[in-house]
Length: 75
Image: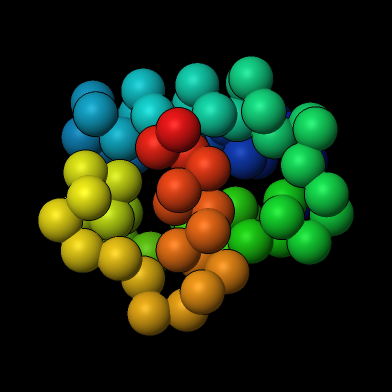
């Protein structure tokens, strides 16, 4: 997926998500491995509420690769 499409997909309905996802995209996405980039893109397919719960530490994704990506974004 192109970077411009990812920027658009990181724009969510909640300011907190916008800030977390866009900061991660601009600061770390280019240094991720291709599989991690694909995991980040997969993460963006989830609902805003699900993402917020994961990124705020209320719950964790069941899939280990998604949980690892959430951890990378949070830290």
